[in-house]
Length: 262
Image 1 (cartoon, one colour):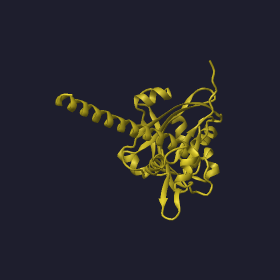
Image 2 (image 1 turned 60 degrees about the horizontal axis):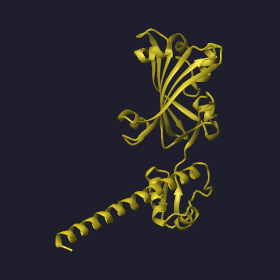
Image 3 (image 1 turned 30 degrees about the vertical axis):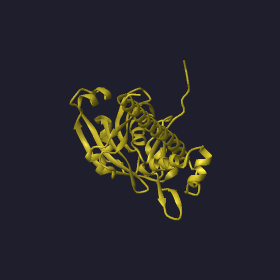
Image 4 (image 1 turned 180 degrees about the horizontal axis):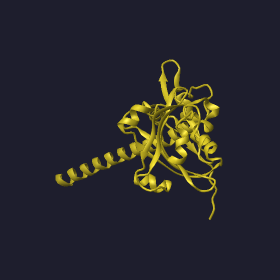
């Protein structure tokens, strides 16, 4: 074989080796992510009642994974702030996420009552001109004054969500003297209007925490937060409550029961 052909052949073998190595790394990363998803589910639903995960060798056997894959999966969970490695103990669960159901229209205190008292810090409250998108959703003319409320909501002393709320002023005026620190807005709306809430339209997405939201929620700047946009209607169909709620993604999980209908 001529020297030039041998060089080309050697270079080709080298490229094949590098490609194979990269493929193995990608496969291991994929498997680590899959394992992290399974372990995350377990630790968030009480699957490790002692608060300590099994040894890496046991996890490797249970999930038919290599020790390297297990270590990578645990690294992913550590990066999420869910577990920590403690010398002489092992990998322990250090964070708890609270379940927020999407099947019923409930206030946060109603939703999380089993986990403790939700405390509300009213940061801003007062009449403000409705921006066009808000006015459109609340069915009021643009520029009409609405009640604007900004609240920081805590559970167990830890920041959980930052809620920005817009309410038509004919209803919202009665909220100005209400106990918003200890009462869900939903309950107050039903008391003021004399009718139950009916339904809500929701949109849920992940957004990057801006500097203000990150500071208030005591979250890292640029961290991902769950943004829930919710427009709530009275039983008669009138829209009365438009909310933009930023949840700390490391402290809340969203769940629901869906039925297939064709």
